[in-house]
Length: 172
Image (tube, rainbow, N blue to C red; front, side, top):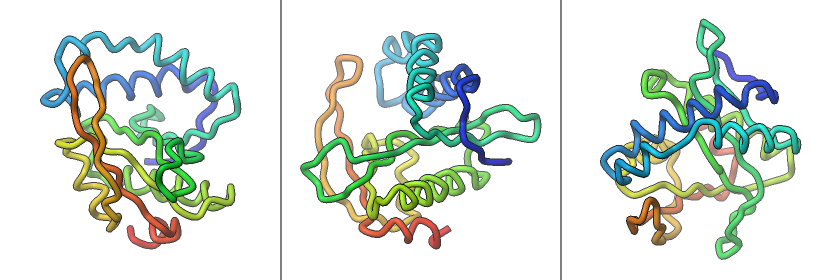
């Protein structure tokens, strides 16, 4: 597997990974009708716009040059917490998980954010998400828990944080 920066033409594959990974990861957490309503074309338009605006998204491609995962991050959107950056999204198709790609993506995002001048990072993880164990591998601080409503269902999510992005480069 290889990691590279996404280009505009990748928007469709990114959207497909986004929707399909939500459907497999959150199938027991989020209402089925909401997951079924996720629209690849709507997500594609959003990811295309993000790329056209110059936002950096990293993709992981398999040996057939197919995108099987992606991640992006930037300035922390919730200034209630002292972390200056945020991991906005990291998703891999189910068949690409547990092969080291997620670790490579989070390390790549951390390196990119350090280059952009950020020092720390947080990520919001839906409680019950099996990927929480993935984040635990990187020894984050447990920062907060908040409620979020998805598909008409009130859920909780936890913020994990790292005071030093360099820890995500060395704790592989």
